[in-house]
Length: 157
Image (cartoon, rainbow, N blue to C red; front, top):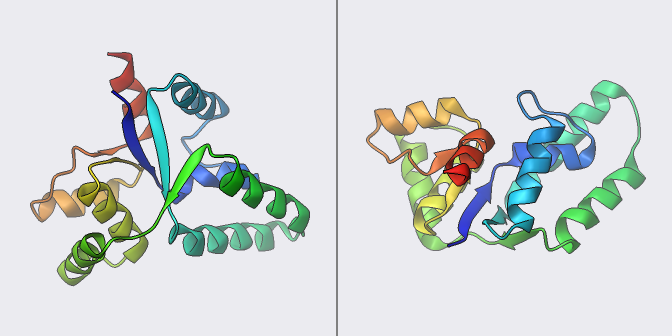
């Protein structure tokens, strides 16, 4: 059985040359291997481009460099490679995300990602422990939220 995995924005940043704490090159290779072995199918929500581009440009401004050509290649890689399947929001996911916002979780992108993973029966690959705590405190299932390490460990069993 192939596990459907919805990918948090964090995991796309290395494509743009932005390294992420607690995400090594070896981790990225493992994630690639489990995909190529047919164990997982990675999905990305179209709406994450808003957050992704914001993080990319913030990082580039810090470095004071213009990597416009690199960014174009990375975008093409993410969209055209078929490594990720890009999906759109559903009404059910939007409704659940709004409920999470009303309960007090202000990161609407994370709300939309979690809600999509729940309504589409996917694992949500994220290192966001704050989101997990919020969801747990409000009675939501957090078993579907896994870091890359947890996902890899699950697949080794």
